Length: 152
Image 1: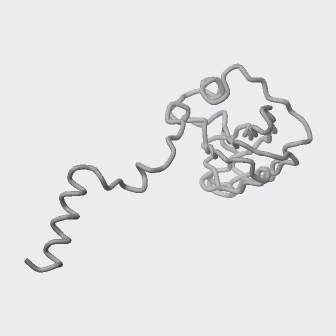
Image 2: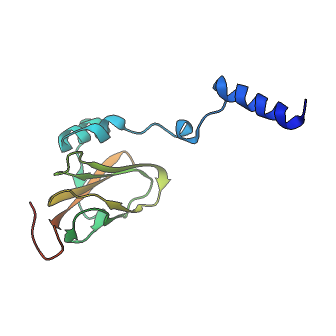
Image 3: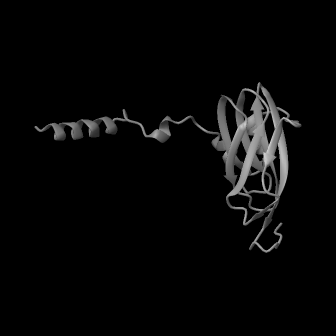
């Protein structure tokens, strides 16, 4: 028996009995129910329970006022809080309102991504830090075609 044949066979048996796992199966489970929710209220209840968000100057959003087609709209969340545990971005008028959810462990309060905005909507960033929930909102107007044709 050659070494290569032995290694292939051993690896096949190991994978077959489930001792090897794919990288996706090793990742922490995400809030699948929150991503499947159809309303902003459902998303908030799943992620935060009965917690009420504190709106104020602690969380800021950097996003365009208008977006052409709404696909891949740049979105930044900046907060002056220590020990950020979680950041979630919710778009109220999307079919599935939860755009992004990031679980952190005591990180700095800066997050940059691109989000999908299906229709003109209020987009809210929720930041959990120090056991409290903070939020900030902005309205993004979606234009179809890029010539100022407003789409509701």
